[in-house]
Length: 144
Length: 362
Image 1 (tube, rainbow over the protein chains, first blue to last red):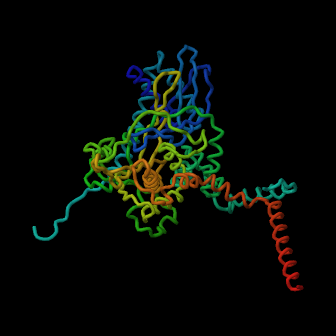
Image 2 (spheres, rainbow over the protein chains, first blue to last red):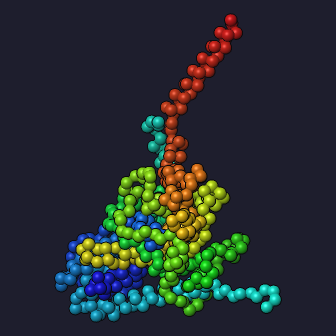
Image 3 (cartoon, rainbow over the protein chains, first blue to last red):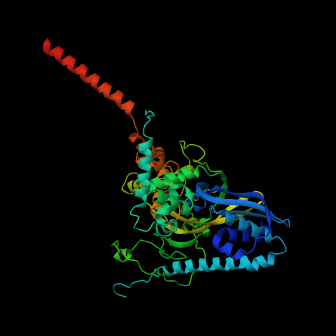
């Protein structure tokens, strides 16, 4: 699995990114052919009894998946939450571009900003949660 | 039985036109956008996603708008839409231990590592109407503080380490899926959990409450309640590895319950479990209580005949779409049924009257 860690990293980042933000960072897209045109479907999300036990079916989520091949031959895949076909197409384009000569530019222009923004979003939420953490203090009662 | 009766089309069309007009309300008032519903009615959205059994906040917002705020009608719309979706696959079981928690509390350990994080809760509010909300104001801002570690340990793991709570037998068996196979009894725990998570919140709450009041009591404590985002991972066959396909928000409740023990086994606590989409806390706690009550048989407890111990009763009646369908069909034309009953009653009365007259004559 570790050999794929880098690609897993950017595919996940692209799936979690706000579609409008990804679109704004993309710029001009290269030419491509569909291997699988964007398709909206459901994925059954599973949980585990007690959080750690045997799996059960929790409920479905909507996803959009697609696959494409750039004119230069690289194949990109995407499977992203929601029903936004543009999101899936752009995620697959970035996935493909990251396997070719433009990888460094795409990383700097698309992935790095998305990663920084996601980290900032997560940090802001964690900071709000931290502000609601209870700081207990003990009241001393009666004779010391 | 009901029969097809022609002639209602014009009335039905007119009724639907009026429904659309009433749905819009006074046109002088600005129309609600789906984004407004999604952002500002988010707990309604969460309930529709949970009971509609489909995580998609935009679709849930659309359903709520179309249903004029009738959440069961909205859930019906989502369930109907869900059946049209091709099933692309299933996720890996979500790792709620890696949740980035907005809220995380324990009623059993004050000083739990990671602390008591209240999050955006109604708890401790005074439940007084806030008339400031009746006026438009500036967007409120939450306070911030330096965050701790990204994830916090599971509280029940501390009990588990000392063997003080029953272990959850893990595994990777394919769980039964009631959206594919009709619910059958006896239902194993995986099937019960799937059924409970999509059951009606009010029904599950009532069942849970009945167990607290003594109908199948099992002494629950909320060991841990956590709400936050988890990553959904799925295997992509073409790639041969797992990828994250998005974040979803979940509410998880783990209860610590009455211990059991025997001559051979030392006493230990038992567990109940609730997991639902979105911030849906009342439902998650209710689900955990009902899950625990339904485990009486596997935990060797007595069946005291409480409704909450009866899996068939609970699971067969918790689905508000099935319940609504059967309940509301009785308002559809039953003219033929009723005519036959009317005929029967008249016949019985005629018979009784004839018998009386004959008696009087004799």
